[in-house]
Amino acid sequence: MARLLVSVRDATEAAVALAAGVDLLDLKEPRAGALGAVSADIVREVAGLIDARTPLSVACGELLDGAANGPNLFSSETLSGVSYAKVGLAGCASRADWPELWRQFASALPHGTQPVAVAYVDAAHAAAPPIESVLEITAPLGARALLLDTWGKSHGGLLNHVTLPYLAEILSTTKRRGMLTVLGGSLDLATIEKLLPLVPDVIAVRGAACADRREGNVDRVKICGLVELLRRHNSPELHDPKSKF
Image (cartoon, rainbow, N blue to C red; front, side, top):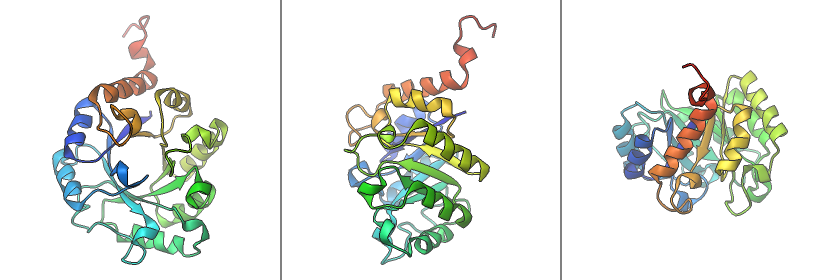
């Protein structure tokens, strides 16, 4: 069963998404890049709002942005109640030390907060390591999940960079490793419908949940439509008029 993750920027948007029935929440500031971080105050406020009822992930920016001052933007106290944390690997393709920096990031997370490996499908634009390298290196270092995302939001969405057969191979590999696979990257409804037969663990959206573009505010009606789409796919018999149930 695929679950729906919606990225929100604050407690107000989090409340809208929760009311619409999302499975997971993600905190990020879309105006600050693919994995733009929100403030520590917002992390604490949203974690308190959901009170561990809904898994929460937090975007921590790009790994190299924090390399000089340590890889963690948030303290262990701030991340209390956060299920997942992630950093991007933009600029890391030419850095031999990125695996060590990522290990430091993962090991500094508090107990209960699991690291997510992020692979940009537009790796050439981001100067990021390829998907296979990210998976091969981070899995032994404790990555709980792999997120496939787009770094640049003007270079097309997920399927402009990778094919469905390729994604099926990645999903097979992550499952063998016991990892979750999260598919994101400027997804629209048509793309999500193509991805669902692959049975990803999580579908991640921002722009598709907004009234305007990803920089705008999340919209409850749009999120409800996404929730219904995944429910129909996960339980088609519940929506089949011929079903006896």
